[in-house]
Amino acid sequence: MTIRRLPGWEWIPGNDAGTWSNGAVRPKLVLHTTEGRSMDSALWAYRANNSWPHATVDPKTRRRVQHLPVYRPARSLANRRGGVETNRAPTVVQVEIMGFSRETHNWPDEDLEWLGREVVGPLCRAGGVPIQTTLEFYGAGAGWVLASANARQRLSSEAWLNYTGVLGHQHAPENDHWDPGALNIGRVLAAARGSSQETGPDVPVVLPPARVEDDMKILVRREKRAYWGAPAGKVWVIDPSARTKWWILRPLLDEFCVLGLVEGAPKEKGWNPPEWDSVMLSQFHTISTPPRSSDGR
Figure (cartoon, rainbow, N blue to C red):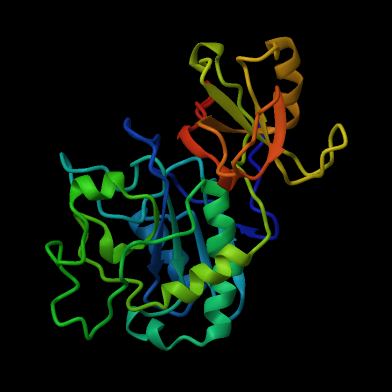
């Protein structure tokens, strides 16, 4: 089974954190800063500490490097034994951004817009993360010590598990870092919403029929080429409660990437799903991520 990478990104492989923990799927994207300016130094630190993120990016040089597929957990967060799952909470995508927390509030608009358009947008779409945040990003002038596991900006364990959207390392429980500082997250997310790149999970998998119920639909992503007249890059929804049979569905699964199970109609009113239809992923609420293959990939 092949691992597909994010289009246009370099690939320097790292070590993942195993498998996702059990629990409700609440996709989130965690933003880190490397606290350095050298990609080589960041890679050295990942190898020394076994702290690989999914990706490392440099807003100054416009370099984007992927280390892990988004369907496997990364290792960049601290995770206390017996505590809440941080790295392995389903589903946490993590990216390290070259730079320092103390400087992000001064980053120019062109760097923030590149970060949103070329990094946050694609990673959110790849991981099914809503391009939104309900959290404030704090810097050195917050008025309290940010670099503490008990800092007031951190989420509780319960809030962490229930949160979905974009947040910073400074918000993660059981951690004491305050990156990415007072990043202008509003500017970043505005650019991310305007990005057009659509990406999906890296590996096609087959959902077992036992997980398909009448009130659910299977979400599958188009591969690069057009199929049956549908434009490439769209998302297809297949309704197993209709006349679609597995002998029809299986050829599609060979051609598409399964994103997961979804429930409910899309946000557009009046949409009456046929056996399958081409829609945008953002219209749906994903309630289950794909199972892994027997070889663990």
